[in-house]
Length: 219
Image (cartoon, rainbow, N blue to C red):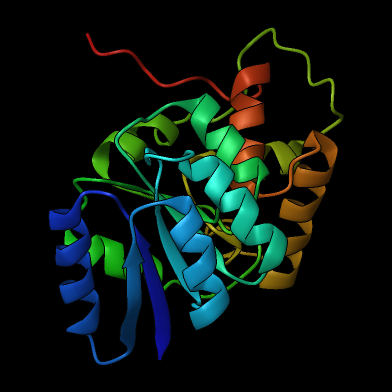
């Protein structure tokens, strides 16, 4: 049974999420909080496995909320609920330990899929069309003329590109036809060279430095 806490100040959405979660045989919603202060208290009482964290809350934002929860309960997975598809927000939340991002208008099956995702450290999880659009459709190689200052090998650059497509180590292993152990090693090396704490942060940092292209503008 996966125990979930909802942190969302819009009561209608919070209630809908509670109902959808509790309707699943393998999920249980331990409660809902409308502020970070309440969320920290409920995490301490109920010890959830997953926290769905709104980014805009009345006391402090969800990034600070994620930092506080991860500081006291590092094993809790925090999934950010947001309508802002912004690399700087991704980077800030990833840096304090967020495990993934969900668009606020994501369909319930997509939200449930991310909640149920295998618990594996540093996996990039992004759901919702506005958020996926920011990270998918990367070019097959880094920008022409950009210097690879961090010293990534050709294979690590290829792995970075696949990380930019939102693939986790298991999917990367399948795409490259290598063992999961080898794929995890490449991902770990990429993150280490970029100075990132998660796959998500690695992708954002690589985008900022030009190792990966930014999102394509419409038209």
